[in-house]
Picture (spheres, one colour):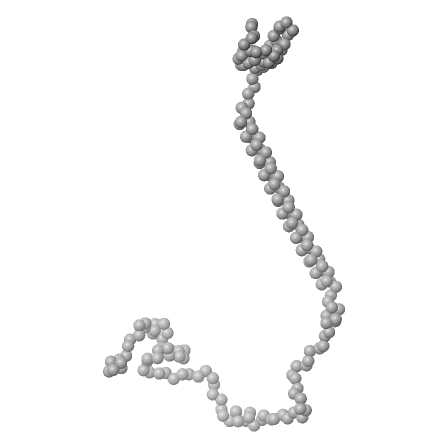
Length: 189
C-alpha cells in the first residue's frame, strides 16, 4: 500500500498543447498539479449598496380584478368561410395553369414514350427484314446461266425445249420423254 502514494507520470506532456502559466488560461486541465491557480471571474463585482438601493425602489403591484391580464391581445376570430373569400383570383388562376401544365407535361411524356416504343418496334422489324434479305441470297447463290432453245421435230411436229447451256443431254431426253409420254429407254435417235 505504500507504493500507491507514488505519483505516476502522464503518458503525454500537455504543456506543449496548452501552456499552464498564461493569463488566458482560466481552467487547469492537469488535475495532478500541486499548485492550483485561483480561478479568475469574468464578472465585475457590484457594490452591495447599489443592489440594496434597487431592491428598495421595487414596488408591488396589486391586481384588483381576479382575472389575469394577457400581455398579448387575443387573435382575431376568422371563420373558415372568410379564408375562401380572402384567396386571390390570381392565385387561383396560377394554380389552374400549374395543374394544366402538369397534365400537358404528363401527356407529353406518355406520347414521347409511345413514339419511342413505335420507333423501337419499327427498327426491330426493319432489322429482321434486312437479316432475312441478307440470309436469302446466301442460301441461293446468284447464278445467271445462259439458256438455249432446242427444237426437236418428230412425226407430230416440232417441239421446243428450253434448257440451260451447261445441262447434259440426258435432261433434254427426259424432258422430251415426259412430253411425248414415253419411257426413256424406248427413245431412238
